[in-house]
Image (cartoon, rainbow over all chains, first blue to last red; front, side, top):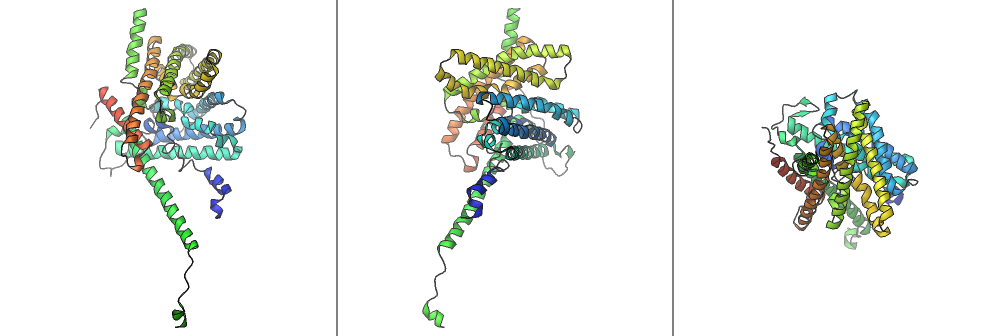
Length: 234
Length: 200
């Protein structure tokens, strides 16, 4: 059996699933409010992504260290309160790098990160609770990166074709500017189409891997036939 | 005074149910429970708990807002204080149900409680009300309308999802992408209903 197909190797690589194969937004359908309403610009996506990393990783660590000792019915409460407390220094820190108007424009969505479903998924997931603390941090980081990647992709399209700018800097080559892309309904459409592309890419990748695997198996199963005796004598 | 309270309550409730629907105008409360619910009874229980908690939390959070304003506490501590109020309400509600509900019903509800209480719709509703400096009647009306609007949106989504599953949808769009586009179309409807116009 190939080294990559062993159970141990699969378990190792599954910890990094959160970025692509188990992307929280496109695959698991988590954090939809942020993907729709906090992606009107790349700066907003960056703020929410930083908040996600700063809350998701500590919650994963907490779940690994104490998850087994906290009753199931109390876990959500604990994780929500911990996230809300962590968001206070994060907000203070972000005020040094982003203009107050940018943070204000996010509205309630920064504070809502404390009840983000990605955090509850990380905190309640058996994978995280049963893992060692170091690997729980890796899982939390990968899920946060996957969440951030999704938000950045959506925000890129919406800002580029909505305002004709990237990160607030105008781009002159944009053929059309649709202000409607900044509305919530457009967020749902962009999320839907990007999600469809993600599923298509994942399916294409799986088919390609399956084709390569079957080709290797066929080559191993059917060795080359020996040449006829007449040809050998010649 | 009572009539004024009731009229303000109803006006905000109808506003939160229709033109400021939490699901379609702000994408609040959309989670896996909403996207994968199959039975109307489960959705009704989920929506009912959410409506009750949002309405009660709105009343308590209005009082907390007044208190924080009096103490001149910065706005960034508002969400923590609201979350503490919601957590206390969750624990009280859970304790009450554990005392008075039969064990089977409690086992059935326990999986739904936390999801229905710690929800973007609940916290989002109280934060929005606090930002707009509502009175007590407006606060509670907005909370009640958010809960009822969420429940109505959940039923709409469930019916739409069932019809999408029976239709011929391309493989790449099956599941979440088709549901998001469906919600987007409904959101566009509410956008037009509220009288917004797209700028050129």
